[in-house]
Image (cartoon, rainbow, N blue to C red; front, side, top):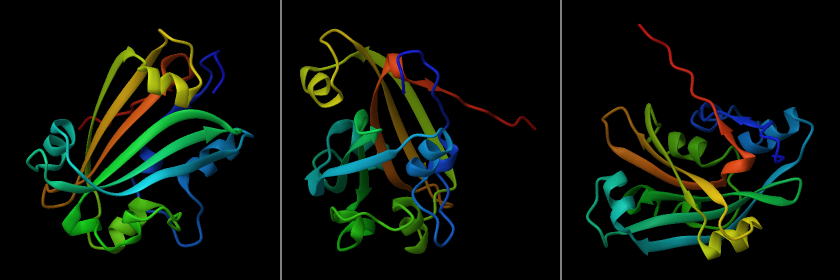
Length: 181
C-alpha cells in the first residue's frame, strides 16, 4: 500500500466463507498484487463492550464480547488495525476467543458454527490518527486515517460480528460495487 494510492480494496472477499484448503483472504489478495500479506493477533479474549460495539452487536454497553485484535501487515509493514467482536454466546470457547490462526478465517468458522453472514453494513469515516494509532501504523502525528465500522448479520438479521478497522488514509482506496435491481 504505497503512498501513491494504487491499492484498491473491496470488502467482498472478506465476507464469504473460504473453500476447504483455501488460505486467508488477505494473504491471497496481497499475493495477487505480488506482495506478502500477514496479520498478527495481539489480543484475543473477552472484554466489556463499549458503546459503539454494543450498538453494532445489538447488546447493552458493558456486556461481555469476544474480541480479536490484529495488526494487518503488507510486506512486513503495518497497514491496518482491525478489532473484530463477537457475541459471547457465539464465540466463547471457540477458536474465535484464542490467538491461534483460524484455518479459512473467522468467517469460515462462523459459518461452520451456524452463523453465516448474509448482510453487511459498513460505515466509513475519516479523522486524524490517535497517538497510539500513529505508533502502531508507523505514521507521523497529524496524519488522517480511515475508520471502517462493519456489522455482519445472519439470515435472521441477528448481528454475529462487528469489525472496527483503522487504515492510513494515504495508503488506501476503498471500492464499493452495488447491483441495482
